Structure formats: structure tokens, C-alpha cells
Image (cartoon, rainbow, N blue to C red; front, side, top):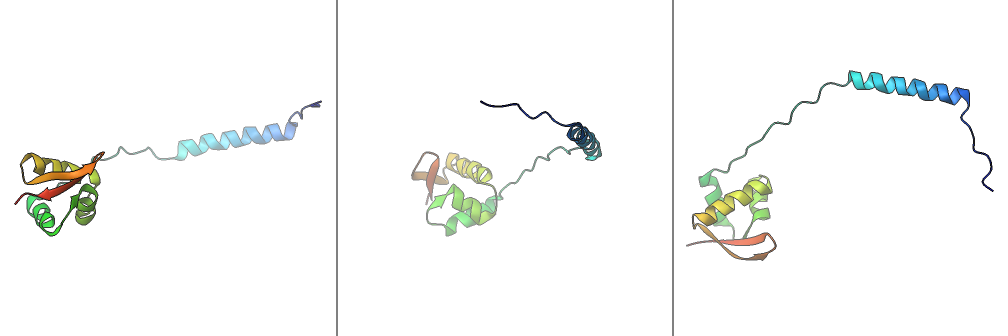
Length: 103
């Protein structure tokens, strides 16, 4: 029912071998991949606390967007402030905490 399968002709076999040769040359021409640099971004206390004063409800996402840093950096900063009793967690769920500055 299926019939005979097409066997590749000689010309298509030569083309596939030529294309494989070109790919090897392209791989050799590519420059070596540089190692990723570790970027460390720190939030200065004066800038961070000044930003917190202007915010009503403090979330990690809004804090990161306001300062222009990554969410992980903002999250670590807010957790450090919580340990120092500068801010406290007042709500949220599943890692999306809402903080309030302690007066």
C-alpha cells in the first residue's frame, strides 16, 4: 500500500555533503563566546529610603520599576530593610508582598 520510497539521487547527495562542509567552515569562523560578566547593582540607602517615602503601598515590582533595577535586587533590599525594622510586611501572598514603612 505504501509503495516504494524515493531513494536520493546522486546529485542531491553531493549537495548535502557540500552544505555540511560549509557549516563546518562557518563554525570555525565564529569568534569564541565571551564569559558573561557578573553585574552587581547596589541601591544606595539615601536613594532607596527617599523613594520609599514617596510610595504608599510598596511592592517589589513597583520599587524595582521606580529605581530602574532588577526585581531580585529590589527584593533583597526590601528584605534587608525588613530585618532592620524599617519596613514591615502588611499583606500579599505567594511571594508578592506588600510593605509599609514603619513610622
